[in-house]
Image (cartoon, rainbow, N blue to C red; front, side, top):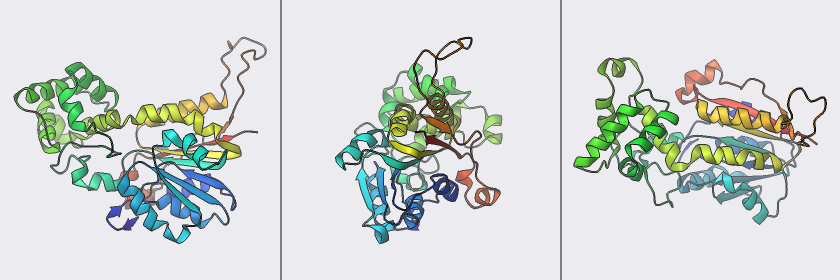
Length: 314
């Protein structure tokens, strides 16, 4: 997507659209509309079908509206979070759909717009809100969480081995004055990580920024709570395709898909199932679909992407 300032290269574009097995008259939901790159490819295949695009970011909604203008009769765009997908569809009087897809994580546009406060490469206010209608920002977390809470999110969501030291340095710095910008936070993080590690690893702030963003936007909670409901919204044979960008997201998707395929909780030595839990379908991707070498060369941000697909049963 390269127009009107919203620049975003759609990751695993053809693999995701292909995985949906689009029926020309079907109804599909893009739960993370972004700039509309995936949606544009879906719409090209829709015939008399319909696409519902959901996003919580006003800039994304505006850009996607322009991008999808040629298909405006087929497209309905709603500003919401995909966790509210069932309510959105109910409002539109749509009981079931033929496919749903998510492209998780932060968009290139959000990363590249310094004022949004997602990036550690430029100095800007500590924001990181995916939905700017929310009051709480990253600054509230950095300046308000206890040292133990900061340690927990940096360890769990950032998977940073220096989480304890980073949390300690943040708390010490904010005692002198509140941490207000991304640049200030980067300097604090750098001071908490040994010089030889900084010299060899990636950007020292990357993992902490990821952790704060996930915590602020409740990204993992929303994903965990939404997958079962999205599968229930599918017609038989309908597919749910999810692109993840780090191991925590991928683990959730893999686990929820597996449980929906085989929900039985009977002890393994029981001759027959007595728990009564029925399979909702099957996992299509035993191993995740990864970007091609060509895509990796063109778009460095695709390197950690994984696509998993679930198909609803009868």
